[in-house]
Structure formats: C-alpha cells, structure tokens
Length: 150
Image (tube, rainbow, N blue to C red; front, side, top):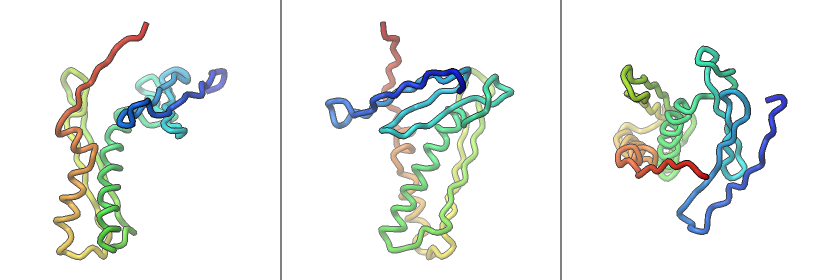
C-alpha cells in the first residue's frame, strides 16, 4: 500500500432509510478497500492469481458473509433461549464451478453448536440458522443493476 492514496469515503445511508451504501476503492494491484459505516475491509487475490495475498478474496468474503450470518442467527437463538454461546462455531467450505461463468458451484456450511446444547433444541437452532438474511437472499436472488457512471 506504499505510495497509494487512500480516500476517506462517506458511507452514510442515502435519504431512503432502506438503502444502504458503501464504496470500494482501489489500493494497489489487486487490492481494494471497502469502507462500510467507518469499518474498513480489504480484499486481494492470492499470489498465484496475481495479487499480493494481503486479504481474503471477494469470493471468500461472500462465503464468509453467509457463514457469519448463520453464526449470528444461531447465536441470537441461543441467547434468546438462555443458552450459552461458548463453543458455537460455523465451518464453511466452497467449491468453484469448473465451467463459465466463474462462480461458486457449491457451499457447505456446518453449524457446530455449543457442547451443552440440549438435544431438543438442535432442530430449532438449525431451522433458525438456515433462515438468516444472507441465505434468504441467495434463495430469492435480488435484482442487480451494474452500471458505468459518466
């Protein structure tokens, strides 16, 4: 990141409270920074793909977004039912498609509940975790518009 100019971006919500916005800024080579509500997240590519491997790839963050959303919903379920969250983990793996277009072909997400989760709560935990916002979005794909500004 030496010699790069870092922009400070406004990430305030637009006038419509339902619209969330942020910007991605080029840092150098294949590295980018996204500034979301004052939180900065970097992305890069592995060395073998031409990057400098300073951060996860956008595709890894996509899978991580699903995994962390599932973890959040599972954690909230546990908290709501007075159950401990210690030991809660979410393991994720994905495979890339071998044909075009480039995309994730499959995702596997395993919720590892806390060791003291009662057996009678397991199905409910899985049901709640399976309906996180990111998973719901994947099930009912949003309209996506990509445009080039003047």
